Image (cartoon, rainbow, N blue to C red; front, side, top):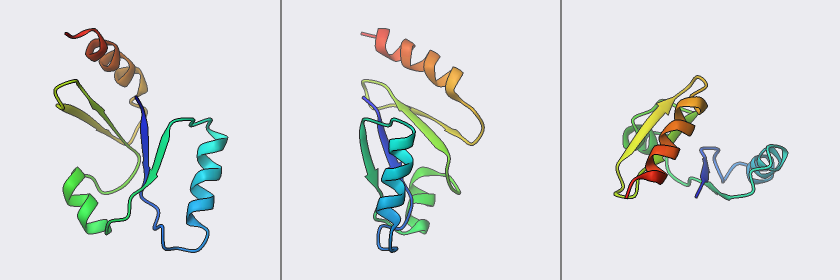
Length: 86
């Protein structure tokens, strides 16, 4: 399962429409959320300054995080590994 979380301010005029337009252009046909928390909260909670960031969780809830760059070759390998684990 994939989920995207936008850090755009949902209270900002037009933010939700802009996020949905972007996701549609990327064919992101999975669950898409807009986080309604302060920047200070998510920076501390997710140990990041800002996007992009990718999190991959295994079946036990353990996760690996990538911040910035192009992590997708590594992400794909880890997803395959996690899916094969029993």
